[in-house]
Image (cartoon, rainbow, N blue to C red):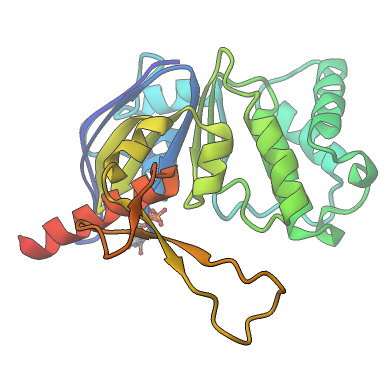
Length: 286
Ligand code: ADP
């Protein structure tokens, strides 16, 4: 599904949160990155039709989300995991998925059951499928939240911090699922974790102070730190634990090579850090 956003603004009361967002993307997984408060959740809410866009262009699958009709029509093709999704504590994951399927217009009980079973397997929820949602860990509830977003096989999937509250093992398992979603669908994963993006998102958009400041292949983010990533050797401090006496390697990001440092290929994390540093410098210089 093609999504086109141009000149999109949004304000809560008088606080401007989106300040002219321009972004276009199609099928595949897009990682929406940015510091806290950058406006990621707001952009996702506008795309989900939960907030009403007042200015600019925002279209998904040809639906104009400025109109009530466009927002309603998109809902039949949308899967959405909000940031603060609260699940009904007395329902089981299996019953909840069935209920969400019904809300999404899946009239056939057998089809709902089949999809719910499939998602329970896919998200590793088999042991918890019939327990009360209220009794499950935050991480398990989050996986149920992802499963409900996938019910009804939506063409546009919006996931706000899907790995929040997950332990490392759950996070790795969920990333494996997210990595498979992009075929034939448009998926936006909003996150502040670069590891999520590295693991699952071939394309990235970085939001900073309400504007898209980078969009393109995730690998291109590393370019931003080109010629600015260095490695320094430091003698181990006496009394350090460990028996090795080899020097410690420390990576630094700098405009001018520090004495004794050697240039290294930047990582994506360093590219992102360099981008945010440049933007902060620009905004304080203005
Ligand atoms: P992010 O997801 O990147 O952290 P958000 O879209 O949640 O960013 O928030 C952007 C800014 O908008 C923040 O300063 C936040 O405090 C503010 N904000 C978010 N939601 C509301 C709201 N419902 N009412 C007022 N201000 C809000």
